Amino acid sequence: MKALLVLVILGTVTLIFLQYRHNRNTRKLLIALGSFVLIVSLGIAGNITRMVFPVYIAHLVLLVAAWLGLLYYLIRNRYYWWLILSPLFTIGLFLLLELIEGSGHTYLG
Image (cartoon, rainbow, N blue to C red; front, side, top):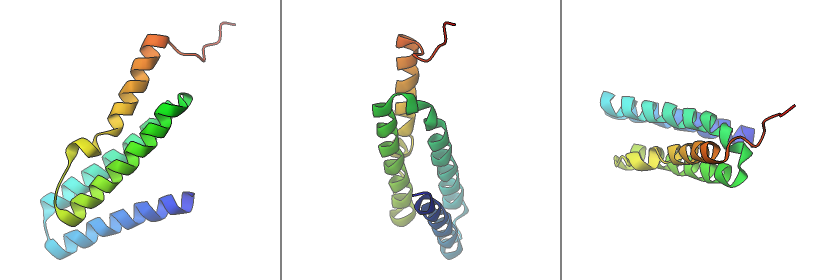
């Protein structure tokens, strides 16, 4: 599974730079690289949602959707910003749940 993840990341970066080499469109390169970094950052930040398993699964699904949105932008030149930012919804939902319910992992000693 980890090898597949590494291959997908390397494949996406390769596709971004091949698109740039073919078109020489600096704006598209910067948007694609920024979106790539944002998606990877949201994937790392989404590890806080592991305590609430349904929210974590939803976060993983939205990460895959964001990744497919980036690939769609690279292939068809249609940028869906709401799809790329969708993993923020699950992180916000988790933080809201923690605010309402409190942390279930506190040690009362």
